[in-house]
Image 1 (cartoon, helix red, strand yellow):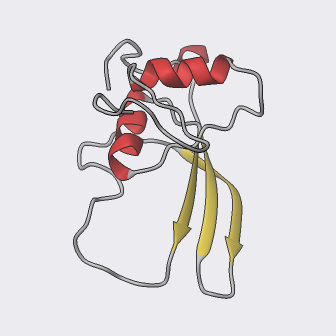
Image 2 (cartoon, helix red, strand yellow):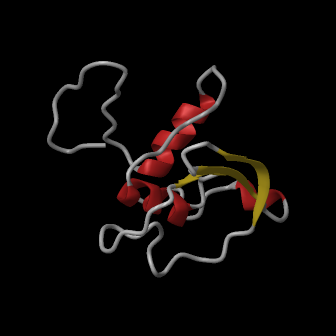
Length: 116
């Protein structure tokens, strides 16, 4: 997502619309349906909009101070179901959680028309 870039290279797309609009557009395209959102700020926006279906988390065996928080302090309560967990020889723990939603309307992102 950029308002200043005019082109990108490699396996990259330049998105200028709101995050919810772009995710819905990508979900409508043919393919496996996986959309990866990287970066703490963009991921926080996706979480706030309610468009994340799955969290894939890698926990490294080190404690660091500072940096960008994993979730903003105002993050709402999100129920998760553990789908997969692996421990690697390096001590890294991989966890894959599915977001559990209640009712048919729960699948829709909040504030879908809001600009990111």
